[in-house]
Length: 210
Image 1 (tube, rainbow, N blue to C red):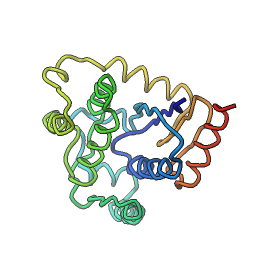
Image 2: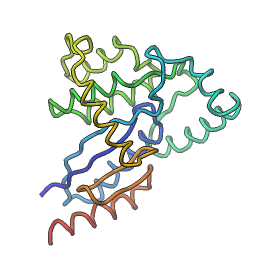
Image 3: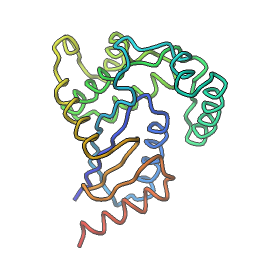
Image 4: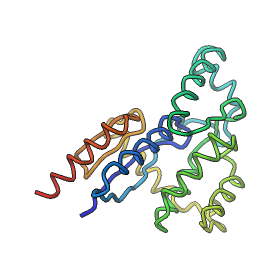
């Protein structure tokens, strides 16, 4: 029996990208454990304008100064290097609205390729410094993963589903991501180390096996 794992995240959350890598590392330590992963939305900036915002302005407002923002980025670069993620914060120009990106992840879920799309979005934003709030960028990301999006963004499909899933997360008191929920009961908050994640997965697997 597969473990059902829900990962609540945002694709502009660097710790979510790191958490994804650590989750994958944990799974490699447990070859006998199978998982069915579902990615759920959580916008870190739900009030972000549809066109996003210049990153320097946004980060300065959020952290009080650009210098503080750069110091935090430097810490993340080190953490990312440990997971073979080459964060390109110095090249990222905009902080996007991620609602359409979450709609794209929802669509990918309909076709069973959510993980590939989430990975591609993380790569596009954090490594390639692309604006994943731009629908043309999202179309290109989708095409690269083999996902057809003709007319999708204009149709409004997935909007209600994403809104409902995010409302559920907030109603559950979730305030930060990533959050991993295993079989609806085992919860891992944050980008924990692979050992911690592996212990939680193994504990859930033993519970299912009883």
